[in-house]
Length: 230
Image (cartoon, rainbow, N blue to C red):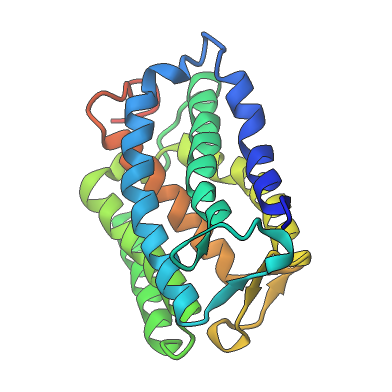
């Protein structure tokens, strides 16, 4: 039994959990929206995780988990879909209150072109299951965002938030893939890595975080006045 992956989860949430007491951020007021977004998006990605693990896209190294499983997933992997949104949406709230908002020029044609490129990649690499799913999840997010919350895609806060989250993502994912806690099936991915991280993880991370934020913003109780743009 090892607590490595569990400790990684605790490290992800420790700082944001401690800093959540800051009254200027007022993060606890948005816990209902956080909970709903976490449940909805987390459940969908856990289902993806279950199927991907079952078909062998990736596996979890028993050396770094406690051995407590839910179906075929380590309990630490389930926790990952709770600690990540808590930490990353906390970062979003901090940025929304500290950085000046600005509307960015992002033509609809560019967004549709991006969706088309991602779907084309999904078709071209359909035989690489993780690659195809990662690309299609990004296309799906862009489609939903265009439909439900176009201002999000033109928000400087959104793109700044993604850039800030990229640093902890790179640190955590490097640990997970270097030990490795998560082991990838070479036939399910391109095989291109940035450091030890498969490039597909960057697409996965983009869609995962973006879906969490989209859901979080759409919850009626969430006070989005400072983070939305007209």
